[in-house]
Picture 1 (cartoon, rainbow, N blue to C red):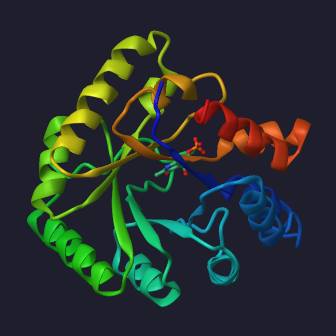
Picture 2 (cartoon, rainbow, N blue to C red):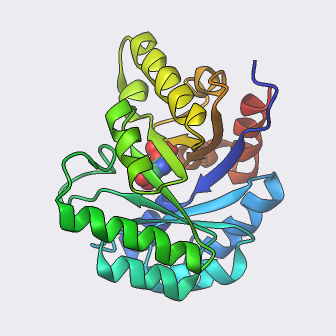
Length: 242
Ligand code: PXP
């Protein structure tokens, strides 16, 4: 069992999906922020995608002014970096984006990045630091990716747990996540994790001592249909802090 407090970020993109699907003014994302914070969420996480398929630019502004702690997920592009600087979230998680994907399908491939993209990444981390925005890099559990993240001066990583979550034999993936999280933490990085986590598979992730924060969306929003958002968040928190 982990005796350290693991923080929970609630990703509300899927509520924005419902809103966008009919262009309605409900569900109210600000009400969701309020409920999430009162239920004990440590931060609100939103992803402004380049295709604006769920969260909109105006949502970022409104949520920024409401949320106590905002984590903004963005692709590593000039446009998104400038939107982040304008809105001043507490942290920014840099994620890969493909137009045709259903959701973020993997981590940023730092190893495969061109030199100019790596330079842009380094510049972005510095720029965010000057603006008191923490940068986290969403990467697959891979030692080489961690080494490259350190080379880019990253201080925080978020490990992609999607492969673990979707695996029919998750033990191997769990071992890999544990190994890589330990490696990163020993190198001085703050290690977060997320993607595909739910009330069944989150327990084993919480046993990884190095993990400091989880960002969870889809499963909590899905569960809230039956038990309400407040209780869905409380349920997840009680499992994480068990
Ligand atoms: N962390 C990151 C970086 C993500 O891109 C996502 C999905 O938007 C999540 C966490 C949350 O994933 P899920 O919705 O599967 O819980």
